[in-house]
View (tube, rainbow, N blue to C red):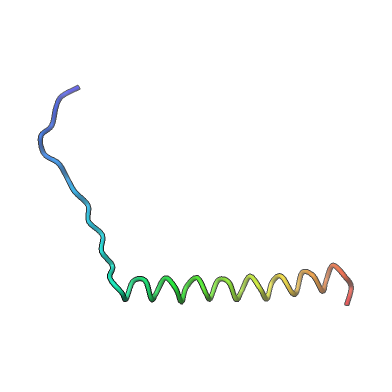
Length: 47
């Protein structure tokens, strides 16, 4: 293989706002999952 001395470094630093967005997004998904879980359990038990 040909040796290449050029290195590409990818640096991704989203900072605090990125973590905040990810937190809200994951909480939103968790809420949807909880609602779906309640619906599924109620359907399964026939309540």
